[in-house]
Amino acid sequence: MNSSSVFQYILLDDHSATPKYQQLANSIIDAVSHGNILKDQILPSLNELSFELEISRDTAARGYNYLKEIGVLGSVPGKGYFIKSTDISQPLKVFLLFNKLSTHKKIIYDAIVSSLNHRAAIELYIYDNDFSFFKKLLNSKKEGYSHYVIIPHFLEGGENAHEVINTIDKDKLILLDKLPTQVTGEFGAVYENFEKDIYDALVEALPRLSNYQTIKIIFPSYSYYPKEILSGISNFCDTYAFQSKIVDDVAKETINAGDVFINLMEDDLVTLVEKVLHTDLVVGKDVGIISYNETPLKKIILDGITTVSTDFKTMGEKTAEVILSGNKEHLEVPFHLTLRPSL
Image (cartoon, rainbow, N blue to C red):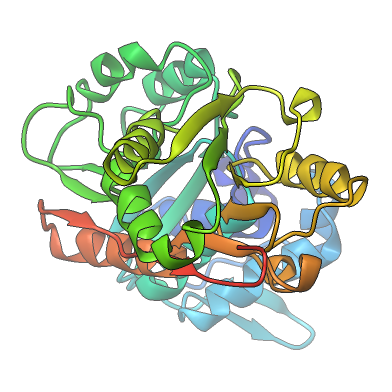
């Protein structure tokens, strides 16, 4: 087999969010595992890979370096790259299906990859909270994977998601972040308890919340966030005698002294901060702000934004543990309140 014949086994999917270098490496690993590429087989040069696959030379080099790290690939100056070993201890192939690729989802992804530590080939797809695309991706990827790790969040149509998820072999299924009650059978899950988490966080923040009268949750109609968050806030307000309001569009909302705003979307936080700065109200005294999901910038904005956030790194690490152990438990991820001057 000459080096150019290797290209028939290298498949790069433009719809996949998996980095191209990883797709390159995964394709070669898969071909070696199935005996299509043999030991001592000469592989294409970096320039050939770059030209034929329309990728950068750096991407090709990263793919080959990964294969070197796991002992599959060798190289000899002047002769090029060759298959050094066909003894590949990577029997796991994981299909990751995320609703979006945000900073927080990247933390989850990086933690999964780091914790698996070359013990699995990972393919990541993003469906942009679109149920139709979610269904299409799952229906087209029903074969060839040892595990399906799915985050099920949708802008609309999600009420039927369980029907699609229930077609997956439960021995291979791991649900992440959200746990739809209609999914049946025994399967692994690493999830947030959205209603309980926000309720408990607000109870913890009660000493500071007592300076305010109304809790306003910015929850746009186009939000993919679970409505259990609304239930948790409503229960808290009923229990501790706060007024509450669901705000669909913060740009149109009047800001009054005594209001506490809870935002979910990053864009809404920017709009909220801009509106507050155009008033004479003081954040942390007249108006309170609580933001979902910790980011480094929230430590700085307005001298510090109070956040409520799940532990995304732990979520990724626990997911990797479930993949490796075959555990079918449902593991709840810790949720944290970080108090700062905005409340």
